[in-house]
Amino acid sequence: MNSKDQQTLRDKMILHPNSSVSSYVTASIGCACIQGSVTTPEIIYHQADNALYRAKEQGRNRYCV
Image (cartoon, rainbow, N blue to C red; front, side):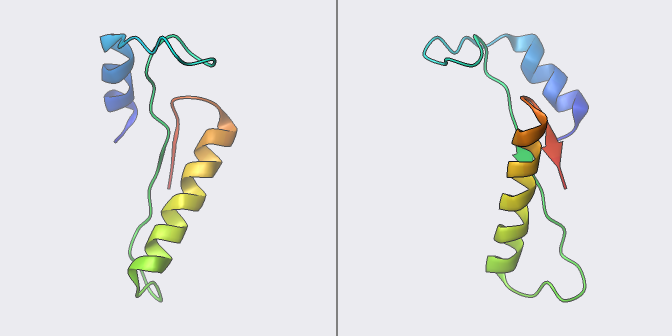
C-alpha cells in the first residue's frame, strides 16, 4: 500500500458509522522487509506489528516500514 492506495480508499468515502474516531474507513498499515538476519515468520510479524503501531501513533491513514 502506498499514498496512492490510501488516497483511493479515502476517495471512496466508505462510511464507518460506529467509529468514534472517523466517519469514514481509513487504513493504517505496518510493513516489514525480509533482510539480513530476519529468518523467521515471527520476526517479520513482530517488525510489521511494530511498524503498524508507529503508523497509528502518527495519526490515521498512515503507513510505516
